[in-house]
Amino acid sequence: MTINADCSDLQLARFLAQGAGGILLDIAANSGLSGKILGKAGDKQANDWILSILHQHRPQDAILSEESSDDKSRLGHSRCWIIDPLDGTREYSEGRDDWAVHIALSIDNQPNIGAVSLPARDQLFDSQINPYRGQVATDAKTVKLAVSRTRNVPCADKLQTALNAEMLPMGSAGVKAMAVVQGMADCYVHEGGQYEWDNCAPIAIAAAAGLHCSRIDGSALIYNQDNVFIPDLLICRPELSVEILLILNDK
Ligand SMILES: Nc1ncnc2c1ncn2[C@@H]1O[C@H](COP(=O)(O)O)[C@@H](OP(=O)(O)O)[C@H]1O
Ligand SMILES: [Mg+2]
Image 1 (tube, rainbow, N blue to C red):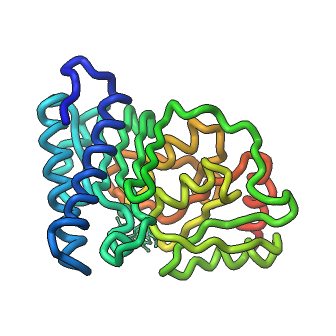
Image 2 (image 1 turned 120 degrees about the vertical axis):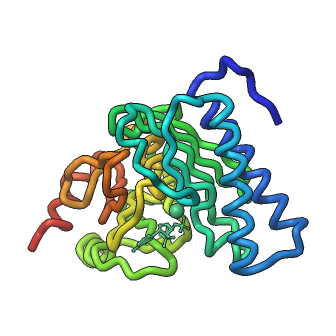
């Protein structure tokens, strides 16, 4: 796979998400590896390839990747690529299809450009996606919540009770965020922590699609920070955001 030297940031993000997805599918199909060893091999090979392309095409830009050490030199840069070469490593290792590749470009701490591939589903999303048009995920009576399939999320339980909502457990932050973008779910809520690479590209895409994106106290999500831990997040249909924020912040 190749890409033109004069490609745009969005074209590059799409190329990286798709190419790394192909590498991950190939390793899963042909390496003979399984379980955690498969996950580690996939993470490393996808990361190495993404970094080699970024070094070639955007040598001046900073990079923050889950799979690379962080010397914090990125803090002096306006432009920082924020990468999760394999989000949903657990699900990938188990041979499931709910895992993703996240490629984001943060400019001045904002999640400006994003591409997320769901390679096992042959899907690719980016931050020039058509705007959200108020599509309804359900029969409009039952709110559907995308939640972690392996982690306890107390605030999702709170929403389920208050809204009589239906839980849709699935792996990967990217998969859950894209479920809301696609209208398969109405809301993705997480607490207990994530890192910038887990949500920067998904948030860039969800925000471009017109969805509400914030921390669960309603404050903004900010990237390329000194501390890359992000305690919680909320992505939901915009017309639900006021009600959901009130429920989440009702003490
Ligand atoms: N409490 C927590 N602390 C750190 N990372 C977390 C976390 N909860 C979820 N994540 C990360 O968020 C991603 C989605 O998790 P989940 O499917 O449980 O919602 C996973 O990324 P990785 O697969 O890249 O490690 C997972 O590690
Ligand atoms: Mg991740």
